[in-house]
Length: 509
Image (tube, rainbow, N blue to C red; front, side):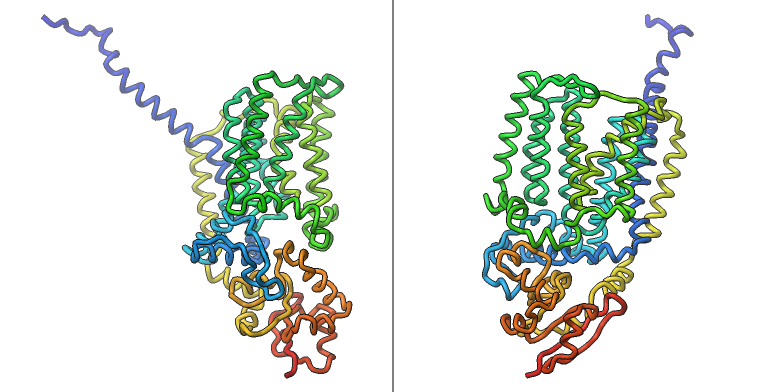
C-alpha cells in the first residue's frame, strides 16, 4: 500500500521547479548585468567619435589601400607576395608582406560589403581593443563603473590609430598577452601556454610582436629578484614558475618561425629600427608626442592620475609593473603613435589605483537588469543610426583622394605621385613612384630622392633620372609652383579643394 503524501512533503515536489526558475533568473541576471550595458557603450564610442571626426576619414588612411591590394593578390593568386608588385621604381625587388593576416581580414570585409565592410572591420577591432582594456581594468579593480570610465577616457589615447590600421590587430594580441600575464599573477600559471599560439598568430598580424616579446622578457627578468624597498615589494619567482616561463619564452620564439617568410619576417621590425632612419625621421606618426595636442594632454592627465592616486593611497609596486609603465610612457612620448600602446598597458592599472583611492566600495550589484538591457538596446539603436552608409563613405573618400584624376592615369605613364596617394593607386592598379611602404623605398634610395624632389633639391634632374612624364602632387607643394613655371610642363587637370587640391602635370612631348 503506497503511503499518502503528507502536507509537509507536498512542497518538496515543487522544489525542482523553483530551482529551475531560480537558475533561469540567475542566468538572466548574469546576461543583463552591468557588463552588458558597459560593453554596449564602449562599442558605441568608435562609431560616435568617428562620425564627429568624419567617418570617411577612417578610410582615408593611406596604408589601408595597399594592404587591401596585397590581400586581393593573395586571395586571387593563392600565393604570398615575394617580389615588389606595384612600383616601377623598385620593380622586381624582394619584398615581404609583414601584415598579411590582418590585411586579409580587411579584404574579406571589403569583398563582402565594400567600403562599409572596411569600416565594419575597423569598428569591430577597435571595439574589441576597448573591451579588452575594460575587462582587464575590471579584473584589477573589481569596479565596473571605474573600468568603464577609464576605458572610455583611454580611447582618447587610442585616437592616433583609430582608423583602418592593421596595428589594431597587433594591439589585440598585446592585450591577450597582458591578460595572460595578469592571470599568472593570480596564480593561474597553466594559462601561460597560450602565449606561444598568441605569438604564432601575432607575427603574421603585425610587426608589433617584437614589443610583446620584449615585455615578456622584461616580465621574466623583473621576477628573478627579490625587491623590498620603499614602494617596491616583489618576491622572486618560485623555481617551477620560473622554469615554466623560460619554457614558454622558448616555445614563443620557436612559434615566430611559423610564417610564410621565415627569418625575413622576424628580421622586419629590427630592420625598421636599425636601417630606416629616413622613415622614422620624416613620417609624422614617428615624431615625438606634441603636448599641445589633445592626445598629449590626455597622456599628461593619465600620468597625473597615477601620481595622485599613489600619493593619496600608496600601494606596493611590483618591479614589472613599474617597468611596463616606464616603457609605455617613454614609447608614447618618443613616438606619438604609441599612445595607443600606453592605453593598453596603463589604463587597467589606473582603474585599479583610482578604485583603491576614491571608490573602495563597489556598486556593481546595485544595478537593475531590465535597465541594463534597455540601455544596451538604446545604444545599439544609436550605433545603427550613426553607422555610415556606402554612399557617405564613397563621398568622403572622393574628398580625401582625387579619385577621378587617379582613374585617368594610364599604365604606360611614369607618374611621380604624392606618397599618400600611392596606396590607393596600388589598389587601382596604377603604377606608382612611391607609396607608404617606406621600408623598400628607403632601402633602394627612392625615399631620399622623393624627399629631395619635394624640397627642391636638384628636383628637375631627378625627374629626368627616373624618366618621369607625369606628376600628381598637392597644389600646395612648392614643387608644383616650380612646375607651373617650368617650360615643357603643363597642368592636365586639377581636382579637390583647400589643402586637398591636387594638380596633374604632363611633360610636353
